[in-house]
Image 1 (cartoon, rainbow, N blue to C red):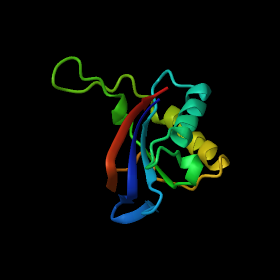
Image 2: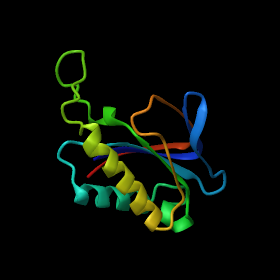
Image 3: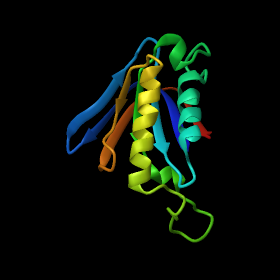
Image 4: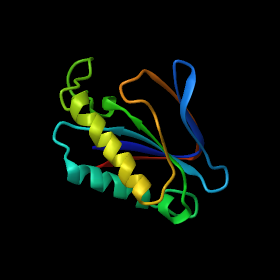
Length: 144
């Protein structure tokens, strides 16, 4: 799995103009997690990613989302698995197909919620518009 984690004060995801997920945390900060599932990812990958999203000290004051119960917005993004080493067109061959990736994203969200975190989400497979107010800016690329 790959994720781009951004510290935000707010973030929103819309589908067809409708807000399907949003977080706001002007005081503590929150996390926008764009997550891409790879073909070789498994249950251990999901557990590792959930731990990293929850426990990495990426919020202001070097605290984690778990430390301050910061909200998280998870948006599936298969394009993170794109390879660009050759040519001008990205290759998506490393990305998990939808029938494999969708339950893994759902399990990731479940594991984050099981940690007591407030988690909003995008809509799997939909054309989404994601907006955020970055705090810092502070962005990490995380891999399992």
